[in-house]
Amino acid sequence: MAHWPRQLRKQLKDEMFLRRLHQFEGSISKLLSLGMIVVILALVADLMVVLTRTIIDTEPGAFVGQTVLDIFGLFLSVLIALEILENITAYIRKHVVQVELVIATALIAVGRKFIILDLSKTSGVTIIGLALAILALAVSYWIVRLSHR
Image 1 (cartoon, helix red, strand yellow):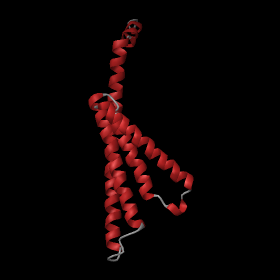
Image 2 (spheres, rainbow, N blue to C red; image 1 turned 90 degrees about the vertical axis):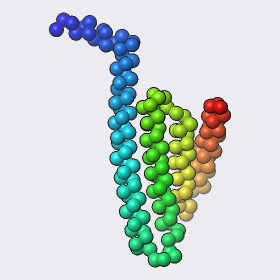
Image 3 (cartoon, rainbow, N blue to C red; image 1 turned 135 degrees about the horizontal axis):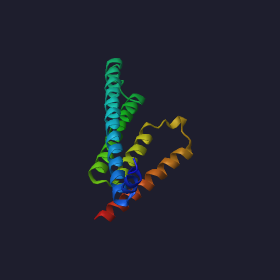
Image 4 (cartoon, rainbow, N blue to C red; image 1 turned 135 degrees about the vertical axis):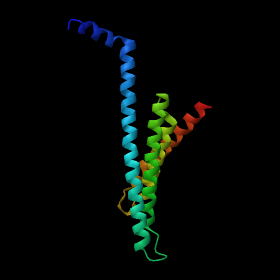
């Protein structure tokens, strides 16, 4: 019983503490990846349901407009979730956040927002904000790509 202060000091030494912290990060990363797999499966199932209903319920030649944009939005949601899973996987492999991958994921997310945007319900300020976000992300992506060469 009297050994616990010594054991605690040993666990709190830098090397041991960092090892335990690394194990904790690894466990959380694995838990997040399992959660993303569940999200991806749910998104794909939702996409299949919407796509099937749309094909069955839509008259020939009427498969355009908002329906297509909704389906594109669902496809892009799956791609975004896959990119997030790739971010987590890369972190598990290398224990480094890959900035290029994060920026690419953000570009897809903002692009998705633009694609599904209802212009009749969106203010000009919102559109300008999204455009600036895409510009900033694109410049950031270009800078990161140049720095990796």
